[in-house]
Image (cartoon, rainbow, N blue to C red; front, side, top):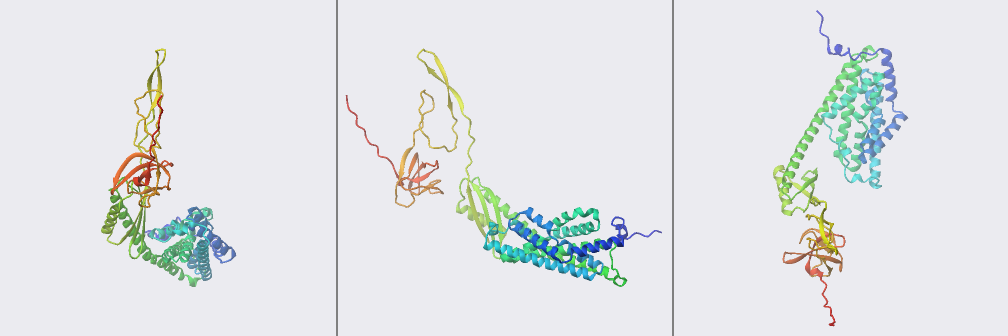
Length: 473
């Protein structure tokens, strides 16, 4: 009876073991690529500089360029190949190249970041760029990406016709950006950023090494000496244990990330519900920062009038009640007006009598009145009578000192938000509309810049009419 094939025998139908000559060529290539020579460190310095500046500038395209230049994939694969072949020299040299390259990259990125702080070239360091924050919260997905990337890298190196896939693998695994993020975090004193990036780099490096060890094992790589045959499965098991040990911190970080995402969704729902009670308000931006003692929430809303203090307090109380933790709230308001659609003018015929007794029809333009704000209205005279009454010209008034030093402000509404500054003795135009607020008479005016607002009547000086004398014939 035919025995069932093992997993390795079944997989060997697709991943064929390589002959000894091909294995020797791959070993020589990996040994050369993983050796810590001038070429290696030169590319480390260049890729680190590119990655650091790309992270500071928050530029994904620049960061991708650094991934392509970075030579760190070769020493990681060299560690895996040296482990499966029991080649202590290859494994030691590859690990040494990886550690020294990582140290050089971290130091260079820290120096570049400090130089940018003291000689500010890019202003984005006022806030942590998104590309930096994206590399501070590794998850199980990053481990799966590194595993797939390591398998693809090792398999592509052993198959010459697949070498074109290596740039894509370098982009997917992203080894240099986490190291640069560590340097940025250290220079800023943000150990949470440095620690998260270090965990991401460790995840990528260990998982890629394990994946390459597995591929080389399936392709028939093994110790050259018979006495080292027992070491091959041990190295594979050790690599698998190291990879599995990363599941614990990644699971913890991933659980925290999921918890924060759920809390952010709750915050967003609460704010949208409360803002719906405001007057035509729209939520534009929401930022949540977490500290040891409180949640710091900053929102930006857009509406025609600012929210009252009582509305903001109600929103904060709703957040504290639902989240059950202290909340510091900042509300930014952007004023916006929604104007009604402006109808196009329509032509209306007007009948004119001529001296010959003939009727002449001359079209005139009549506009439909809307609730939009207009410029300074002026009285228009028409040579022909129409049904539209003339609009009176606003009376010019002058700003004078009043009882309180508020003559230099123009308000959106009586006692409301300041919309413009005015100067002493500036000329305004009275729009013949008044309101009494808090015992003060306010007048609606318009200035030379076509801004309509309100000002206390006591700050306005009206012209005194002068009687004119006429001679009798």
